[in-house]
Length: 58
Image (cartoon, rainbow, N blue to C red):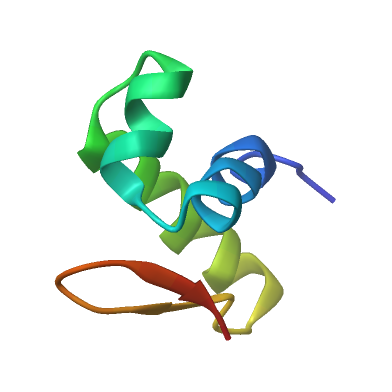
């Protein structure tokens, strides 16, 4: 199993924000989103509930 996206997921879950996670990781918000989307697809499960204001664990 590939672990790509795990660190991005942990940061988003901790900060409830893709933008804040991206800043902490030093990467773009789009990259964080792509990594988490790919992780969700590999695991075949929705990990986060996303709104325009924040992201929460599903």
